[in-house]
Length: 332
Length: 308
Image 1 (cartoon, rainbow over the protein chains, first blue to last red):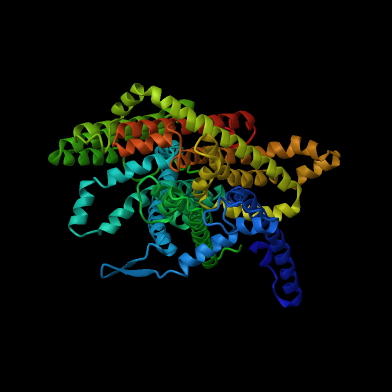
Image 2 (cartoon, one colour; image 1 turned 90 degrees about the horizontal axis):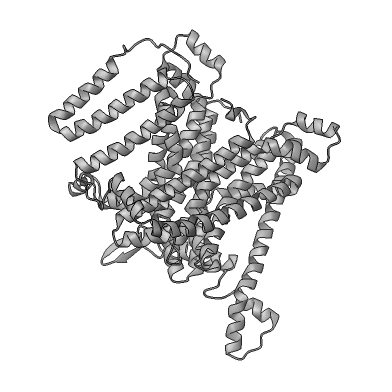
């Protein structure tokens, strides 16, 4: 969208054109979103109708169509909650709940607040993303510079992604909590207990997030064409000089594209990691408790919170990307 | 492509000498560590030599195989020499023994999760996404409306819909297939639409001068040029399908299935069973991916990425 809207915004003509392209871009999206909402409401009525009719029959009531529709849209545990119900729940658990509350004389995070759960998911996500991204870049640099590493590591990096991560999540929790060095570090106060609890989740999210970075960075570091590489050779540049002055700058656009994929994957990794590991806090834990107690509205609000987090993370990276590329003098 | 050969600088013997030095230093404190490091450096030296000197097709297979075998061997070595508890990390040989001993549990689990849940969802999801992509490709309105929404949804954690879909479709494999459909649909859609646009203007103009109909140009030009993108989507979706099917079982399943087995085996600390399931899942995932990649090579033999 923005690529079409950026050029020539000078003067009234430019502004009009910009408005024109913006509305022609926004209108179809609005239409699709409106269609989704309409289908959603229709689905709510259809799927929740059975319960309404069942309740009415037990009380011996005869409901009119409008009464049926009104009831299907306002159930406590609907099969499909309406968008409004989900929004109400989101609002009540974010703006309507304090972030901290007093418990046993201490101020602690409030588990009724959805921000609290989002925090418990986002912290390991970011930790895993940074670690995974770093490992991905290191691997890519090795792969580009060493033929042996290219041939031996790349096929196994691909194979590693075909292992369903959920399966390894419980094992990582068991293994990490039994590493002697880590336990010693906690005892000596080098890292806190809370940090230690973050590690299994963030390892799983880095397991998912390193791969897109490896693939993107290998392509990026190899993107300088033969002419540029030859120029570096005529300068008799060393491998290190070629890397810092040519390969790395050339790979930046590739890096950001893969980082955006990677941070979304990291979030999925954390949420999935919360399922089998008995996490009490976090969006994944919220999904799990919601499903145990049949709290559909809670499930949907956790799902939307996760979606909002994913969108915010990707957009933040997009903003950093634009700033970086502008500083580097790349014209989009 | 780094083709700079015969670099100046380090003589050939320096790296092996450093490796030997590290091994010798490790041997002073811990013989087991020296053994592990020795095996690692030795295998790496073999690989490095093969990769730089070796020629032909064989090297491309031998080098990764040596690397994988080294990792497995080191795993076995570490577990045995350091006497790691089987609960923390069983040796590969113990996992293999567990697989052989429990085939009559593993097979029904495999059939329930992979063959019924994942495969059914994969076929329905990818098929539906491809048909939607054709519709999107024909309509400019859908392209401008559905595609940004699809791109947005593809980045969201769709696994989160698993509890909802399990509630809707029941505990059996149908709900797992539904989760897989939700997970694979948008990545597949985005890739297919991108692929259908891949033919260039000149080629489409040529079809136009031939007075080719929509279907003719679709079948003879645009579908073949879309295949690399479509297969890219199909390959991404193999992994997603497996993850989706296993994740969904954590929200409720009949008493069979890989996710279910991992869950209850974890509860009983039967870690060798968990590892056996992981090994099966990894093999199934790699096999599924490999199969799609093989079909891709067979269908898109003309594409530059397949030339060798």
